[in-house]
Image (cartoon, rainbow, N blue to C red; front, side):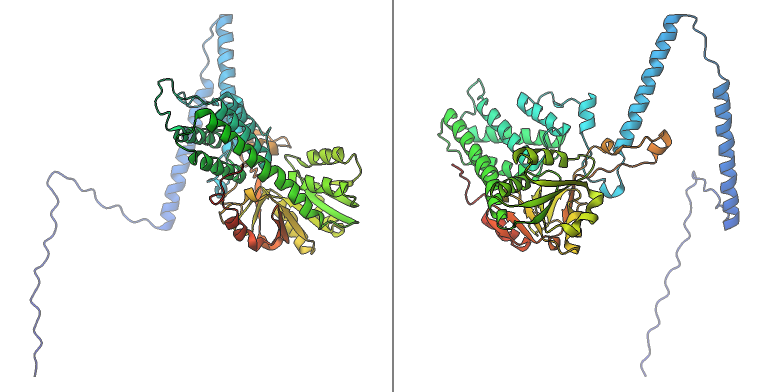
Length: 455
């Protein structure tokens, strides 16, 4: 028989001995739930008594009489200054309050620029062209809105900066013209994005094109020749990718408009406006329902420009977004604009677009998105929370609120929303009318790396 070996006895662990100079306090006795609750209530009561005593002593303290008018006026001025600073702090706190779901988004910057608290040129070492700061002010103010308008203004300012660009007086780095221009352009673009307003997808794609043509400049090219070449290619990009693309979209959309149609459009969009004007001038008979929404009310501009272009020969109906369900039964087609087109076929556009597309899809009304190809983004987006832009929250303040109401009120002014691809019937581009599933193919075909010259 096999005998199992008995394990060797392990030495006992010695009890830890506390150092001589350290005093260990005794353990606190464990309290029951009722005892802990009674202790907390006693602490709260003691704290309330202390606060009441401090307020009473503060009321009983009298201010010393100065006896002089100058001192009284200075005290009043100081009180007014402190009140104004406190009010401004409260306003900044109310503006800065954002729901936890949107804390990652950059906050609205326009209020800081116009109040004078932040200078447009925040870096003393940063020497910017006056046209750059002027355009940045218009971006932040909202004077220039819309993807096409913002991109055109950016390209025009870049042309001005390139024409006025001068090499250093010491004659150094003249052979590094492309590197110097690339650094200048990046600095300007970063200034706009950081201090004025977040750039759009169209501005980002135009910026990529501009950097590519700067990088492709020959090393032995003359300064004046390089400036002329860059300005010509910027003009060609503006003409082909924006102006001619809008005309081509209007021609493609004309095939989808029939006599007797009721077309629904939303707020202001340049491509949709060109479609309606071109259709009316081509002899088509149709009616337009223009939907508008707060707080920008851009539909008024759309309505004024449309009626002025066609001399009032189109029957138009102007409604707000909350009346959409009452008129959708009469609509035959919906034409919507886009700020960006994602590679998965979803559409980023003015907030409210997704709701219109959803209702049209439920009512089985075709939804056509009008978008230039230079607005296509390689990014995939599934919702409008990860990437969005914050507008001025004060634009939502319509009803007067007291101080307590403002403290408990959080204003959220989102500028864009995302329309899923399943709500879109077709996308009208200068390349033709495509399904949303073909956006990725179109992005590959329109890759700017394959054709960087726009002469």
